[in-house]
Amino acid sequence: MADASGSGFEAEPLKGGEAEGGVSKKKSCTEKLGFSHLTGWRTAAFLFSLFLCLAVVFAFSFILPCPVRPQYFSTWNRTLPDAATYDFLAVEDANEDKVLDVLFIYKDSEASRNTCLSEDLSIPCLVLTAVDGTDGKMLWERPLAAEFDWVECGVKGLGRQGTGCLVAHADNLTAIDKKTGVIRWQQSRSSVLNGNLPLISIQDLNADKADDFAILSYNPEAPSFTPIPSELVFFSGKSGDQIGSKANVDWNGVFGHQQFKTASGAPYLLLLTKSGLYAVSLRHLTELAGLESALKEEKSWKEKSDKTGLISLYQSDSLKRVMVVPGSSSPSLLVQTDSSVSLLHTDKLKIAWSTNTSTLLSVPTFGQFDKDGIPDIMIEEDIGNKTKRVLVLSGSSGVVLWEVHLLFWTPSPRPASVLTLNTYSVFMLWGQSQSRGNQTNEMHSSFLLHPRYSQLLLERRNPAQNIISFKATLLERGRHAGYLVLTGPDGRQHADLGETEPVILTKRKIKEDVPESAVLRVGADESAVEEAEVKEAFYRLRFSETQ
Ligand SMILES: *[C@@H]1O[C@H](CO)[C@@H](O)[C@H](O)[C@H]1NC(C)=O
Ligand SMILES: *[C@@H]1O[C@H](CO)[C@@H](O)[C@H](O)[C@H]1NC(C)=O
Ligand SMILES: *[C@@H]1O[C@H](CO)[C@@H](O)[C@H](O)[C@H]1NC(C)=O
Ligand SMILES: *[C@@H]1O[C@H](CO)[C@@H](O)[C@H](O)[C@H]1NC(C)=O
Ligand SMILES: *[C@@H]1O[C@H](CO)[C@@H](O)[C@H](O)[C@H]1NC(C)=O
Image (cartoon, rainbow, N blue to C red):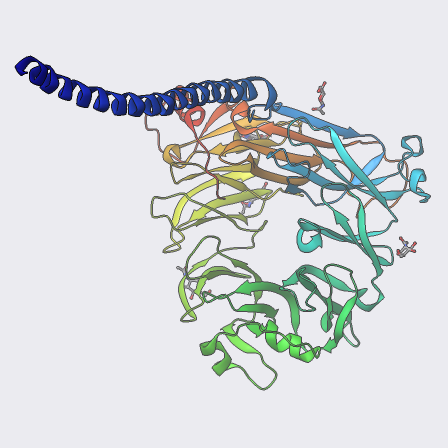
């Protein structure tokens, strides 16, 4: 009994156990089933992820090309015999390889090149061309009817992807795609035959999702025949059609204009006149053309405007040029007169500083020389006897931070600067050291200035003759600081055919000039900076993304 009971008891638990076991067996079976499902899944997942990993590895190593940086030649040139060229160089990424390409325009008189004839144009014709920034190879050429008037690239709204080039030539305005060189549109420019640069770029006015632009015409008028602006015409960026009516402007004494945006983003047109600097809002101008626009206006400026919409910003009877100081949060203007350069703060309309100068040879150049983060200004004064005084003025106070005397020839290319990661810029300028002045061979030198070693200039005897255009720039984000020199006969002076000198566009990497340079000591400072130390400093330079 006991046994039985025991067994019974034992059996019970056994039974129970068995039952339990059965249950647990069932359970474990189902568990096992689930488990085996799970292991199956796990294995599948494992294999799948392994496969995925391998696929990714494989894809990245073989199928998807790694984002290789384009290789570039440190020096290249593009040479065109029998041509003439114009003071124009633009850098744009035409082939989308993240390296900027170079656009320039030349007049082609060489029939055998067949460029003009391919488009049924008579010889000579104009050719706008883009060459690859990495190696100087031609990307596209766009033959156009001569004569050339002006060109601007980077014009918003012209191409499908934003920007394009606009050429004023013969009777037409021609919009050209920067990637393909294809003509986007071509329109008669009879309404703005005397239209002059700079182009006035403006946000979409005709609701076609492309930015539009306006051209200001300077018509020579009796009795003085000095061109004065007489009309402003708005054009659709997308189609080139005129939008609105011609805005008749009566701006006596205006000889130049410049586009400007206030700190709050209100677009204005600055007008340079014989009595000083004025501004007029683009909104007012669109209203003159009978166009609706939602353009902003600056309240404090609007209060100052007279009944014709003009706002007096600065009085001067010898205004020469106005430039917008780059990269400042509250926009300032550099105002140049016959005998001074001044900095005008546009928020309070106050002159921050003014420095006397003699006649300037070239357009002022901005760059960081001292450590205060405010752009400084390099200017070139003509001091007679073929000599120029090159100065760097402090952007915050106008005081002279640096100077050198050099010989010059005309045309004298404007200096250039490239910003480095160390928050200073390197400057590049042209001329000839006075100690070489007696040499008969009038060879230009290019000079490199490192602001931290400003007792020295690196001088490279540069074979470039007849420099028509010069530009120093970063051809790639954050690297590849190079300069472009366009030499050859000047298309505006050589109207005749049969040029003997070729047009040559040369690109050089800035650092490439360093080993070939000699040292020129500046001023009387005989401090013991070694040539090797300065060259080393140039090699170490890292360039910044923003100009
Ligand atoms: C242009 O480059 C070629 C080699 O690429 C060179 O032989 C020639 O001298 C260069 N021409 C100029 C004017 O620099
Ligand atoms: C001007 O543009 C029109 C329209 O595209 C064209 O027919 C004409 O040939 C062009 N004229 C010149 C000189 O390019
Ligand atoms: C600048 O020129 C003005 C007028 O010619 C003169 O009054 C002023 O003293 C000059 N300033 C300096 C610092 O030479
Ligand atoms: C220019 O040179 C002449 C002689 O060559 C000299 O008499 C004159 O003083 C010089 N002028 C200047 C401003 O240096
Ligand atoms: C240039 O030549 C003149 C005379 O020919 C001489 O007096 C002068 O010292 C020379 N200048 C230099 C820098 O060699």
